Image 1 (cartoon, rainbow, N blue to C red):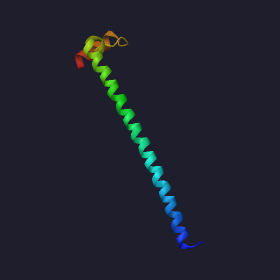
Image 2: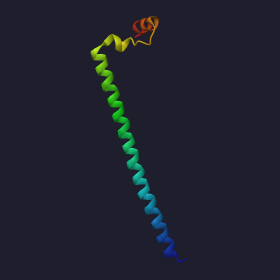
Image 3: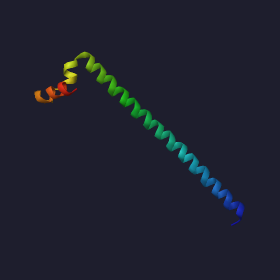
Image 4: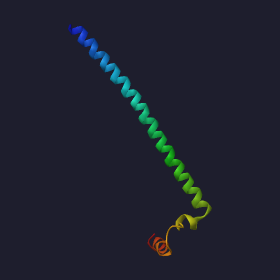
Length: 75
């Protein structure tokens, strides 16, 4: 195999890897965007819930009265 053939083969491999990296990067950015949007949605819903009923927000139904008292006293 000649040197030029080896160089061309390496160039092709590098181009393929470069393309794969770009595709993976796009997938990663899509995943980051999806995660960010989910966090935004979570905090939007949480804010609406706190605004509608503050007591239910700060004293969830699954907490005992003692846990609620500790929450209020300790901040």
